[in-house]
Image (tube, rainbow, N blue to C red):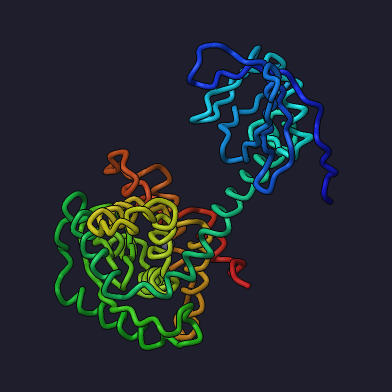
Length: 371
Ligand SMILES: [Zn+2]
């Protein structure tokens, strides 16, 4: 809806034309113009007084002010034509509005602070919603396009850091390692495309045995799985068959197939290193990715997804899932407190809680986890 704009009443002003130090009495009329208000200046103290119109862009318009902070005097510069001084800023402002000037953004925000608060609340809610829902969604979509080679590179870097700080070579007998690897390969052969979250994704699976970090297993993007000697020993001590260990490995395969690690890295990337990527600083992206990887705490939803994946894969391989639940339950009771080798680091915290929490083990046992 267009407002009706009527020419305002003239207002008195003093004009310093820049050549003479003497001020001249003038009348100012603000008129609507094509680009905004124009300023017409009538000289009063000459008989042959002329008027001159300054178009909108020939005038240096003073900044607008809010109602309670009006200046006492206004100075308006007319470039090579000097400047004018006005003693009635309120009248000037009214005339300006009448000539079609829109109030400045700051002024509108000051006079309509509920609008500002509303906009602010909306923006914050939008950001939170993006962070909570948008980023994981975008990461899941983007992860489709992350090349396997990239994942393997990042994982190699992260594994190097983990090994340096927490892991030692395995002391399991080579034939025991070979037997577990053979069962692991059998399990991989049962990996039906219907079980895969990303059907075209072909990770390069590799099972590594290491000592350290207590009874544990973890997976890195691209298909590198690590199982600790302590986990193998715990299963033996509890008298559980290798199906217990296979179940844990199936869970780790679930993390790989769902690309949980990659999705977390991509999420962090979306949030934090968009700029780094944009600037082409690849080295900082790589180091950040491996930091995320070593410090990542898998989300509860990721654990549930991987548990369900493990149940489905084990069922397909015609293996019992009860031993795995028994193992996790036993570990969660035994290792309720954080592992002693956790040096307050996120990695050790994550690994100490990763395979076994009592709730997860109970849920697994009850089979009440998956739809
Ligand atoms: Zn897990």
